[in-house]
Amino acid sequence: MIKTFRIVSILEGVSYLLLLFIATPIKYIVGNDIFVKILGMPHGLLFIAYVVLAVTMKYELNWNSKTFITVLAASIIPFGTFYIDKKYLRA
Image 1: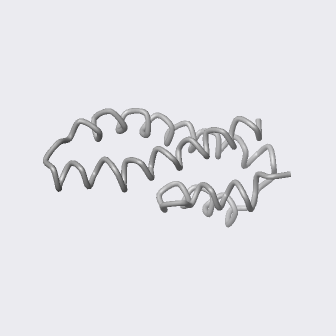
Image 2 (image 1 turned 45 degrees about the vertical axis):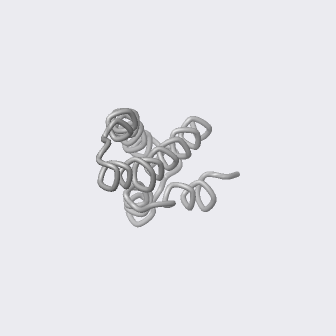
């Protein structure tokens, strides 16, 4: 289960960075929203998977409330999921 969460965590982080730093600037600077449309749905699905897996991991790894909130908050901070992978998921 940890391996699956790590994979989803990394993919969610990469999709968020691509959406935030590539697709959104292209949308507003060039006026072409195709990349937002292409990356938006996969990122949304990965975000939902991240949250569901975080809830599952909370019970599997006996995370306290502070750790759990940190893991959830990291999903909305750029590069946050990479921090979670390094700090909590690597064994």
